[in-house]
Every structure is written in C-alpha cells, then in structure tokens.
Image (cartoon, rainbow, N blue to C red; front, top):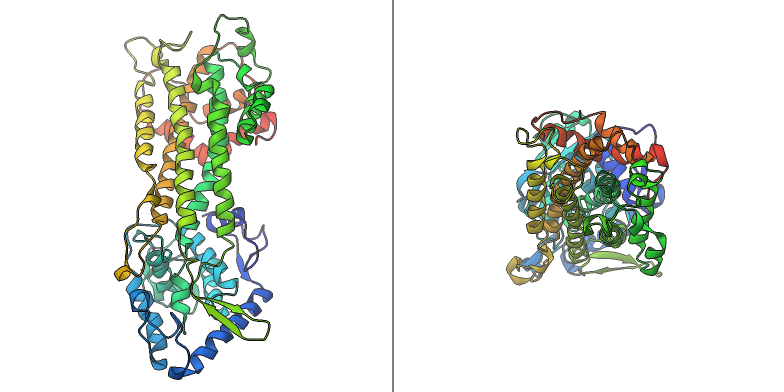
Length: 523
C-alpha cells in the first residue's frame, strides 16, 4: 500500500463518498476522519437506542437491541445480558473460510463500515467510528477470510471478522507485520479495543461492505482496462494493417450508444498520422475481421454496462445498509424500523453484469491475437510472429494462454445472483450471493488484464515486423513503453516474465499513460 497521506486531506466519513476516495483510502493510505456534523448526528441517533435500553425489560422489544438474531429474533434478551449478546454475535458470526482478503479490500470494508455508521441511522456511539478511523490511519488490518457470505443479511461473516479485531479478538496485522492476535495488533498501534454496547455488534456486521469494497475496486480496474483495450486494439490494427474507416464519427452518430462513440474517438486519436496506415490505404481488402472493425461496438458495450454498475456502486457506498435503522422525528422522538437494506441484490446483479462486461474485453482481444499469430489471417507477418520458420514457435502458446483465460472467464461469468439458499431456519429465505459476484468479478479482471497483456506483446511484435514503416504517435508511444520493459523476440524464450511485466504496466496505469503522453488524454 502506497502512502500519500501528506498529499490529500482526510476523507470525512458520513459525507458524500466517491469511488475514487474509496480507492485512495484502500490502496494509497489516504487518512480518514469523522467530522463534527456526523458525530453529532450519531450521538442523536444513539440517544434513541439508549432510551430503549434504559427502559429495561419493561420497554419495547427491538430487534438486535434486546432480542436474539435471525430466527431467534422473537427471543427477548434481558437488560443485564445486552453487552454479552453483542460480543456473542460477533464471535458466533466469525465463520469465514478460504484465502484472506488483501489489505486494500479490508481497508475498503473498514472505510465503508465507518461510512454507514457515520450516516447516523445505526444508533451506535461515535466511538465505534473513532476506532475504525484510528485503525485505518494507524494501519491495523483485521484478518478477513474471503468466503462465507451469502450476501444477506449482508456480508455477515467477513464483517464479523473485521469487528473481532475491534474488540481485541481474532487476528490482525499492524503495518507490514505478520498476523498476530487482534489485541496485540491493536496494542502495537496504540488503539484501544472497544467494548460493544446495545446494537453495536449488529451494526458492525449488518451490511454489504465486503461486496461493495471488492466490487468498487474491481470496477475501477475494469474501467482502466476499457482504455487499455482501446490502446491494445489500436496497436493490433496497425500491426495487421487494418483500416480506421469503421471508426468514422458518422457511423457512431448513426448508432448513438455513448460507449461506442467514446471508443471510436479513442481509436481515431490513437491511429492518427500513421505511416503504416498510409502505406496500405489503396489496398484491395474490403473489410477487416470483426475483432478489429467492431471494437467501438464491443468495447463500447462493455463501457456502457460498467457505467451503469458505477452508478449502483456510487449509490451503495453512500447508503444506509444497517438493520434496524433509527429515524429521528420532528417531535424529538425516534422510530426504529426493521427492514431489508442489508440485502445485496442490487450489487449482486450489477457485479454479475460487470464480470460479463469486463470478460468481453478479453474475449475480443484473444481474437485479435489469433489474427496476429495465424499466417492465414495476417499479411506480411511471420507465422506466430516467430523470428524463424519451424525452429521457433514465437507466440503460438501465448495465444493458447489467452484462450485459456477467456474460457475460464466464461465459467466465472455464470451469474451468482440467480442462486439463493435459505438460511437461519428459513427466516432469511432469499439471499443475493453478491459476495460471490464480487469475488468472481475480481478474478475476471485479473484474467482480462493478463489477456490484454498478451495482445499487447503480440501486437508489439507485429509492429516490429512492420519496420521501417512507423505507426501513429499514440501507438508508437505505447509500443515504446512495452519495449522499455520487454526486448523484441529474436529467439524463443519463456514468455511468462514478459506477460507479467506488461500486466504490471497495465495495473499501475502506466501503459495508457504512455500513449496519452504523446496524444493527450483518452476517455
């Protein structure tokens, strides 16, 4: 995690939160704070819960405050047992399995949990957010297994593991250290664990913050991959001596999908002033293959789908997903209302779509790789872009690797949201499986990044073979960025390191940046 806390002001939880601010906190260590207005809002909301607990056993029965949970919601809990109830809830729900979440995902969860509480409808003390803020700023990161949530009542198991560290239990790491007991990590950071009061354990685990954190970070990566795909596609067009005619603005106006127009504009910008393009302007080829000609339509559809997903996530990170929720009345009283805002269905559907949208970028990219390596489909390029016939295999198996990634994505794109397994003795009889949607989307993004890295490598090799003809300025800059890390293929060598280097160039967002340095910003 890169730290840049001195460069940006703190993100104030309880105020409008952007996905970019979430990424700053999760990946770059931007500091976090609880503002005075949000603190006051939380205190007013807490007073309503205190009134219920102070009434004792004679007061109203309120879910999660003085009752059990799930199928046990009709069971009343005595006032004397309220603290133990909340601690037991966190302990019993810490049932996660599988690989641990990465630091960025955990930090995103912590920020989003603090955000929900700071919106002032959870009825918890401001001290809960103070602890989350202190942990984020000090670099205390709970151990959170990645599996175990069905996406309603929210991401119970992952959030329970987060809450365990807050009460000094479970496991956590401080800074770059190893996982240790939660109490030890908190002590190392100088953060005091919190003792949970009425409703506070429930408010820490009830919500969609795992799927929202993982989904938002994967979405930001997928949006960047849309731009990478345009640059990679432009490189392939040049290497294959394709035409820029299909990107004519008049065609895009005739079918005015916004993503299509953006992609066509990016491609026109990338391909302007190309010596390679001029060299075959009057050739006899009538039309290019779909993987070249239809980039605006294919890449553009992915952009439009991801744009819709962004809207869902932007709403979600500023939403109250707790249950029950506290609403203050004008007469000074409060209503505590049980509902279903914890249900992950809005995110589950969106993240399933996001995975499909991202996967298509790799699907069409692999077809361009086939165009580049198949001598029956390319003109003037060596078979498999190998330096010598027969003796060398060149990029033959790189195309196979890309095909493997594309096929894996097809499996991962089966929607998780169409499934539901009832839980909690039938009380929670429909669940979203949104956490699975988020995890699949994350893996699809990784696969797409690697597939695009393969296309970029093969297109760069094709451009090498077009020398001394020069590509456009944008393509030349992208090609130079690759060649600064990866030498031309003059004989067979293991390509896995080359793929990894280009994938990192993409992930750090330097690849598109290299093209933009020559031609200006791409959308």
